[in-house]
Length: 279
Image 1 (cartoon, helix red, strand yellow):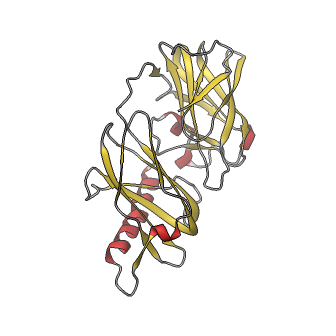
Image 2 (cartoon, one colour):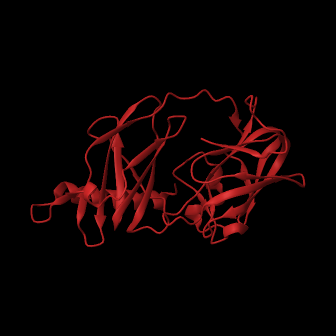
Image 3 (cartoon, helix red, strand yellow):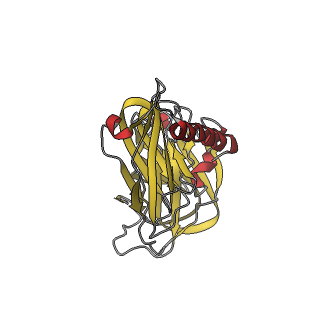
């Protein structure tokens, strides 16, 4: 996350936390359950290093989640990645810096457009035991040769290969025309592709299918969407271009693109690359 974007998130969360902590009887903090349309959901990543919190509120709100290994919450915080900022109804925040096989406490709190404050109960979730990585992600830290566009410096194309689920690459409204080309630094025997599409709270900006082009050969389309989608395919290449094939329109892009090298699992497909699996 860029410095000024992080500062903005910290300032927002700090103001919100302070407001909730110091609210007087004349301006009480209401239960956030009263304005939640659907149950709060927390989905830990398979490696146990992050978790995505999703919640839909009946009111336009700005929300934050604080978390930590103790009931004191330890200073961890996450806010919406949604570039709309401010108040809205569909919220998604990625809690990062987690440890596998660990119980975490968290609390969701928010502020309505009328200034009313809301706070949830202290709740817990547990991260899974870390899976041993069978394959190496050779795209992390890869060079971005070119991309169709960038919404801003905060949403730069390099965010798609920085290994940080709290950042993302967003185009400036490219929709189905979004693309990005990566240079892995040397030819790699690829055994799979992982793709995490970005998404806006209103359902736009999701890449649902994409193609991969290497040395003039196009593979796919592969399934994508929110969360990690893995396409089992094999090829050898250094420069790889990813093209959106089907999207929900808007500022499409990717939270993270992963390129795997190493032994494929026993159910991997051939180089035709038509099989995808959601994780």
